[in-house]
Length: 70
Image (tube, rainbow, N blue to C red):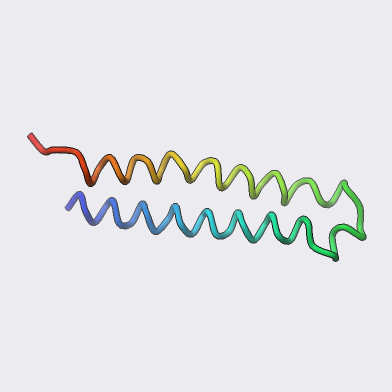
């Protein structure tokens, strides 16, 4: 059962990293760079936050798989 939770957590983390990547690429894209820095900052910071919050989830999934059961 723990492998299922680890797989679901891994899938959620990978999708969060992908969405964070999409946010960052849209923030530095041509359309938002023309509109100004004020509209560029929220997707950039949101993408960075999504990626940074997914990293501990990846770490916990790896620990869940490698931990010994009592």
